[in-house]
Image 1 (cartoon, rainbow, N blue to C red):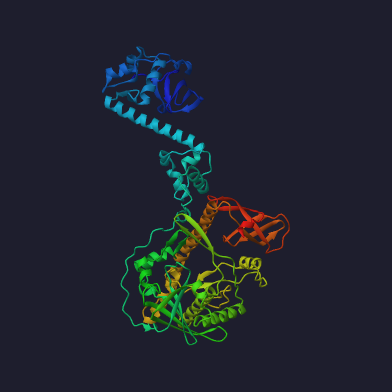
Image 2: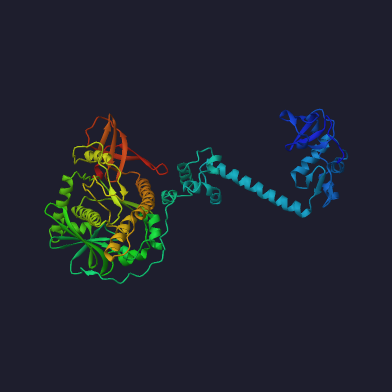
Length: 614
């Protein structure tokens, strides 16, 4: 066989398939199972038998040969195709040569090339048989899994096949072998739907933070001790941290000293210095991640435990003393490190004390400030909001009531942000300012729900800048967020700058502030999206847990018989087909028709009111 040469009619291998040489020369012409192939280089084929072979059909044989006998005679030795064929079939013909080569190509008993074939050892054969059996078992298990999946059935052992589906649902990869085999589009939504359908996931799995690559573990950066420094003692002033019930990180409190408003803020920058490990980690997170199932902090929990206001009898603060005139204008601002004694109150508790001092005076001050901002073009929008919480897998949704105590705190924080901006402008301190350009189209003030809905749609997105500018929504010429350094990284930067100024140490320059703004804004943008999508997820879970839900919707926009409807009880907006032309702000009784968790959407219908619901 080594001395055999190609002739017309020779049987050869071409791309691992049998072929017949029809034309010799510098380039060959072959017959293959797929038809004639021309201009093939001789070195691209391997001779199996000199022939002649007239037709590939001649290669079929009913003789099975003595494969095992031949292997037994050659075990551990080498041979060539001609000799092996003689041993197995008793003759070397094109048909027997091809049959023998299929054994060699199979690789179980023999391996090699036509000129040099090795008989595998018994151990090699047993190992290969075991591998093939395992592969066959895997193939069968895969086929069985797909059959069950098409029928919506699921066994515990199927979990191993769903890993790529989980990874696609969580945004960790963009393809799934399972979805491809089932003929489904390889999307996150389809992956999520399949996992729910099979029961591999339940409603408690919220994939959206992981899809957005959010950090879900608490930061563990090392912390230094709170530095010793002179602080003004303001513990004689009653100070009140007013928050939602259950708030774990109170970072602001209010006091009155005569006509001066004190806004005390947790002195986070005293502990978190620029470019420290905790600062860098907070910068990359941008803000706390508030999810209905829990909060992921941007700073180590030890920071909150030691600095949040009211958790200890006396707390360190950075206090803003604001002088406010009769028109609600901040006319002066003092910023000092301080000690404060803070009492914690919920908004509901504070609401019951608005006829007492200092709450009565604080509310008067807040109303005056808001009136001043309204006169400057501020847009005050009061659309329904809800608080969504998950406890032991059960979702609760509670409306946030439009309390005066909430407005009081909000207005005080706005005044502090304006004061921080003006204080820094007068002293040439680089800060991240919050800017909001005025809307292109002015709308008349309308305090109905549809009017406020329309006004909100005209507002432009706010952005950060080191150059102060108008915040149209707040009606302020300059504004900087400065009241949540435990929760927002750029508020922390404001505090770091103010503390550096007060202590006469090096300030961050404009370029350094800009770099921090870019990193934190990118991170906090993802945080806000994760929060929004998570709220939708858990609202849908609430509807799935309450499939007979009914409630009121308010018509806030319409186009002929299509309407946009707000559902205050859920904090949800939906689109409906109206049965008749209705005026804006009409109340519709709605019932949930479907909650599609993977698609993050819910569908409602107009229902007949249930008298038992009232």
